[in-house]
Amino acid sequence: MTIRELDETYVAGTYRRFPVEIVSGKGSVVCDADGKTYIDMGSGIAVTSFGIADEVWQAAVTAQLARVQHTSNLYYTAPCAELAALLCRKTGMKKVFFSNSGAEANECAIKAARKYAAETKGPDSYTVVTLKNSFHGRTLTTLAATGQEKFHSLFQPLTPGFLHVEAGDAAALENALSEHKVAAVLIECIQGEGGVLPLSEEYAAAIARLTKEKDVLLLVDEVQTGNGRTGTLYSYMQYGLTPDIVSTAKGLAGGLPLGATLLGEKVQNVLGPGDHGSTFGGNPVCAAAALSVLSRLDDAFLSEVRRKGGLLAGALRDAPGIESVTGRGLMLGLKTVRPAGEVVTACRENGVLCLTAKDKVRLLPALNIPDDLLLRAADVIKAACAP
Ligand code: PLP
Image 1 (cartoon, rainbow, N blue to C red):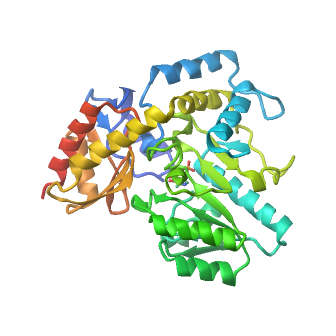
Image 2 (image 1 turned 180 degrees about the horizontal axis):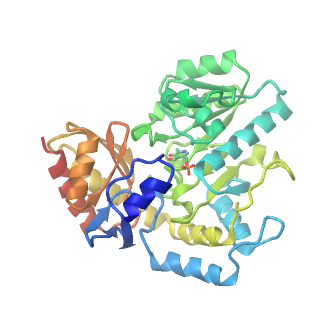
């Protein structure tokens, strides 16, 4: 059997794969089994922050692999402790829980918020308000948090205690917080899977005001927007928000599975021994990878991400067949006249790998993609969009 046949026979059919088998790569160029090369404008859905086989990242990972690949959370390891300290130093948060994915990072955020609310307001203050069109993960609880009905219908009953309000409607949020006993509001500053839709500054300010007034925790999901993707370390930093809990994953370890839930002042001690855990959480190889990624995301690098984002958006904005460009930094969504799926197919045939998000073409290249590749990819995308 070919790899494609083996996969289609034996791998659970949850993914609609593109007809490409990736076998190797370097930086922002990947190579398929037929030897065809592509400019990678998706970076594994915002994961390979420094591209494929980045040498600094690889050295950090292989050095840790040569020492110890796993212990358990019964013992201390340096990468885990140092990564938690670095995350706290860079964000002002106080403690970190490590897991393996974005969904788990959100799961922990929700557990921490519910426990805090139960302890401070009473056990019936468990409701978590999220936004319509959001995406927070695939576990039953994070599906319940996800404000898109299409993900819910086949998996009832989901975890109870979630309410979804229209993004941008401050009055709807105020009503929800007044009428229900709410533990937390959970948001993405830029809805990624929902179509690369940034919240407005005014709405973000209303969220900050209302969560404070109503004494409700603010949770920000930085799974897709985090770790430099939008041109600041975390996207909430551009909105002037002060979250109580931040969840992140994807690009954090640059291509190895790692989720992190950052706990702020109020909730720093809410999780005690036995309240939560994960066998692989804080795995030393993943943590060493993340230390390497995070320590390179300094101000100069982040300003380069913003510049590259501006370069890409500028090259695409107003091109024939492109109606709008949304997003920040290197997280961009294109509303195209042609259906997004057709654009992505045409790009792939012409050597550029892109993504979709709902009806948008979504671009999430590696944060260090060279300008010449970015502009070459932009030319292919423009040609694919032209009506
Ligand atoms: N939250 C957001 C905003 C996401 O974009 C995603 C994945 O796309 C998740 C959570 C879930 O992350 P994971 O697939 O790592 O569980």
